[in-house]
Length: 514
Image (cartoon, rainbow, N blue to C red; front, side):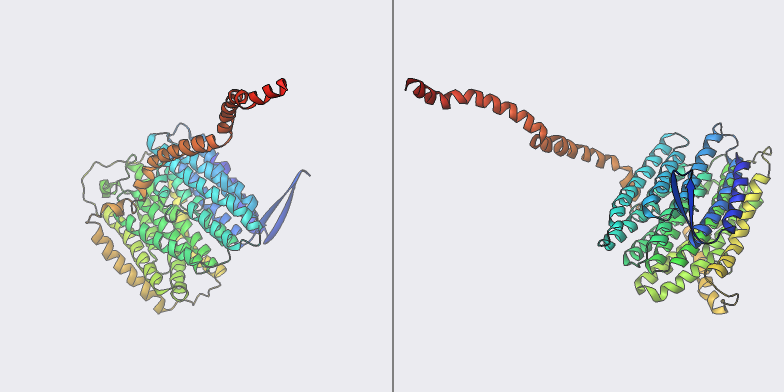
């Protein structure tokens, strides 16, 4: 199944690359007509998605080789990828809900794959948050069809995108989704679920908004602080995804759609590489994700080297993929937003360097003595090295190649002054990362500004909602409505049956006597 998926993916890349931009009409046996739109957004992201998903599917054969239900896992992954492709190529918001809903259902099934208490709890949180986004989606459609409700349509579109892209206050589900297998995390955090909301904003929204800048800045700063305080390997990378989603929301807020989409593509390649590297290291320690439990003997040459490469690119090291997109966003943000948000942006960029350096410093310099655990030699090395090699090369050169095509930048657009600010932030981030690796953070930072306990204690809210439902829906409203009318009509019948003789009895007697 993995080889078949890779062949189909390669054919898809060749087919999409040969297509011209425009609208294609497909006639399904004279029953229905399907409209597909190929533009720079759907074409670029679909090629990126196919490259990442092929690498992840090949690598998952190594990571999930001992799983008894690998076929079910592979089937759910293919459904997940297909749902994202449906969302990419459907040109109208009304029919985009097909891919949107399929993404939510398939992501829920993948998060609860292990079927334990933690996975079920995380899946419920992910599913309910996606349901909120679905409600905003259904509210958006009538507003979009009406030309009189442009403002409300924009508010609904931003709200539904915030649920999928985990912007504050919907951020808690993204770290919780780490209960899924690592290949799922690599897809969710790179080019599928979290990018769906951003993709809809890029394609359908044409207005800048201070609301996007506000929520994006706060999400970026909160996620960066929480990543600095986190000690779980997968959650650190998940929170870094949340931080970069805040950067994308900021870019959209100042109406730089092409820059946002460029950063989305660069981030997708980087995040897939980081998750596969971390997954290889976790696999070598039989599932341990605690960063303080690693030591140097656990690290293999390929995963650890490419983890450093991916982290440096994520920091914005000059001439790497992360630098190409992040530096242009900072430059554009300087003249397109209030100075206060620009300072928040710089703080978030510095902290993103800090948690990346903390990850490298703490893991690679650990001196804790523990028994070395080797990866099984029965697994072919190709399943590990080939995906990491493809994504590792992409994390170095893909940003430069895409910048010349998408941003129309010449090879001489960089001068020495462009390197000064990024290098200063990288150096300061390295120093902060080494410093924070030895300190503890307050509880409100470790709990994502109390978002995690609020969502974990949402059962109290549900109990309160149940009480309100019993009091109003099944109580007062029922008694005022049909149930009360039915009961009261019977009581009134008895009342009139008893009262009628006293009221009309004397009148009837007078008539009869007269």
